Image (cartoon, rainbow, N blue to C red; front, side):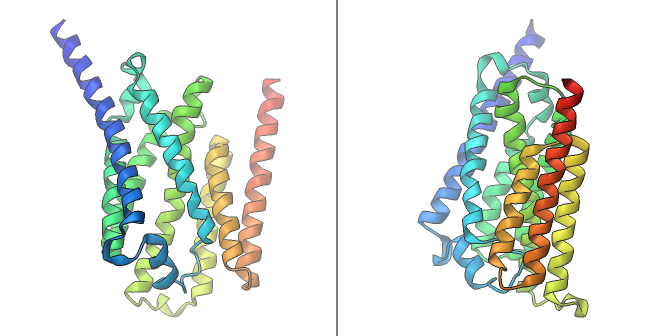
Length: 262
């Protein structure tokens, strides 16, 4: 009985900590836009200091944070419900989402403080826990209820997908800020390489896990990059081609799945 009560208490603490971390990250994000540190918001820094970084998507793309936080709140509320206290999958995630949310808040502070190299470290502090959560939950491979898919799997997929893209963008911004010359390779070529890396990762996820949410977010980012670089034919065509391939791939994979299940 004592061991059961201890386990019950640990689960309850994890639930509260997870919900509190999500709320905290959201509050920090909102305040950073209302009262930006040093006078410039994240978007304004991107549009001024990093206006020549070609991998940055069009401004509208960052509206996806609304969807990300909507998903995170759904996750937070779902996992804090009493009947989810002993859910094995949620137990496997432990405090990893707490770490990711804390790193998210830290990233906001570091980026606004223009400590861009350190912000890359914080970004990895978001990315790595999300990868572990994604794997532990078996997203795209484990069959779960509809409510669990919407409140657990989709939120993590969307968050991870955007952070995967954001990590590439963050690294590019940090390198630009320190004046890295790209080893003599042009910025356009490096952008092509980064687009191909992002697309390759999304293709792997689409093939191995048929994860529509993850793939859809990468398509969203690719189209936004294409629109931002519309006057650059190479980047525009490549980004749109990557988006088209991803859409086609996920449609084909899901069609085959439906035929096999049908």
